Image 1 (cartoon, rainbow, N blue to C red):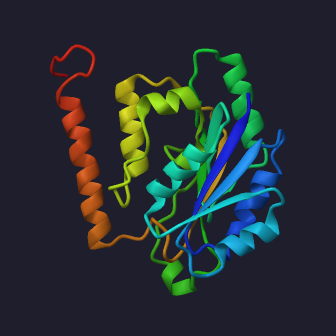
Image 2 (cartoon, helix red, strand yellow; image 1 turned 180 degrees about the horizontal axis):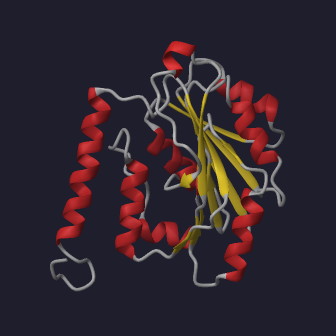
Length: 231
């Protein structure tokens, strides 16, 4: 089974090295790594090229993370897809753990895991004190934790590019409706960074996107896609 890793990036020159380093430490190595620079102005693409030999870099005008992910997926040819945000990092055993689960669980179409969240050292003490951090690892319903068979991903469909945020939640909800079989080992596979400018920061525009994501999820629950009956 070949593996493609897609990394969407926007103004992540200061963190892309850590993200790519965590991909390079995987055993087995991914067959290809594609970074999609989503209109960065801080030299993200150049920083990435200096860090990771053999990296494919695609560039596009600022279109959002979902669009960057979709473009990267279209450019990949592997049978398995994995994703990583440019300011997060994988655990050292992420791919080995998930490949093992896929091999032992022929019915599984995707593997997740747990996530541990941490504050970026670049945050000042005052800003950092405003965050209430999880006390330990949590189930990771995040793209960065996912390893998925390409045919299963295509059955669910691409990420919703019109959603500024919430596109991952939207995709996982569509996956549930489509009957995608996901396994969740109780082991950390992702370390999620909280920093200024990340998707974790809220704004009126982002709040509207979350409301739209929730509206779509409610509509999907009103009618079963399998038999047309109400849930």
